[in-house]
Image (cartoon, rainbow, N blue to C red; front, side):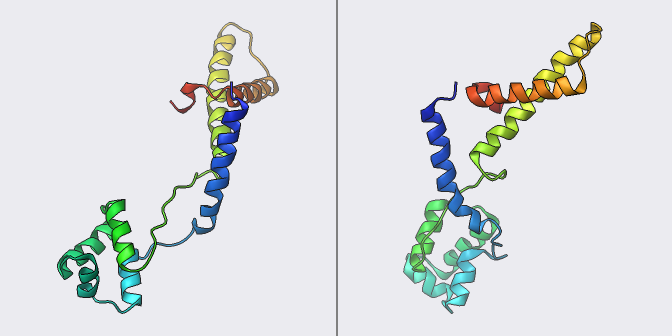
Length: 154
């Protein structure tokens, strides 16, 4: 059963993630942030390389790896520091919050469970009404949300 501690963890995580909501629609520059910032500062690849103790070609490789998404977070942080920038990193729920993610998944799972049972009953000529099925789905979803069973994310 979802206890108060788990509920508090979910609420705290949602509060942490809400700050990222404002950057959700930021468009990443096509050549990456390192290149965009470096060019806006009129810094050459050689100058960036000097700050990182690498060659201009290696600095260019860094920018390309960032644009391709193959750079490590540590390396991106080092490059950001060399540009006197700070790496900000985070992930956000597509559904808006952890609570809404749980609610959506619980509803999906509840629907699957209830419809499976409903089909069995239908085969035995004990079919439920659509209203009753909807009510059962909502009740099961509430039960799943309250328990947060391990199979929720399977």
